[in-house]
Picture 1 (cartoon, helix red, strand yellow):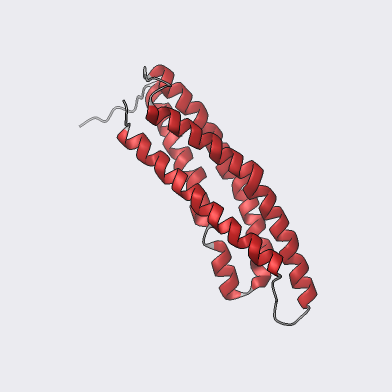
Picture 2: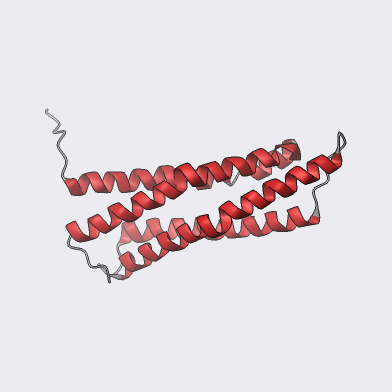
Amino acid sequence: MEIPLAATAYELALWIHIVAAVVGLGALFGTAVLSPVAMSMDPRHLPYVHRVRITVNRYLASPGLLLILATGVYQVIDGNWDFGAPWISASFLIVFVLGGMLGGYFTPTDRKLEQIATADIAASGDGEVKLSEEYLAKAKTYAIVGWVAAFLIVMSVYLMITKHGA
């Protein structure tokens, strides 16, 4: 049986769209476990955790969102979908909200948390690391916002699959 290797432009756009979502946004899910693991091992790893998150946001999540947006627009136009369809409008809104969260909250907060953790570690000297109340409060808020982002990602996948209003 011969398997054709040719694909339409729409199929290629869909493939890029899905890969960008899996790689770019999937990486965000992976980074969610970094802080708890670092805390259980040694809080001295926390600056590294925040640096990894900044790098993931810059090189995976942000480009992934850009590709998701571009290929999504292409699919709506080429696939004769309607930008006003509820599932499409909501999905685009989620992409913009996630992009805003990445650039306006996650990356700047990770930079701040890295600085605070580094200062807390330095203040601890060679003894046990005592994280400041400032760090703990900001890290708790970060985790809550992370759960909101995760929910939005899961909802966008649901909308893509079910296409409510199509």
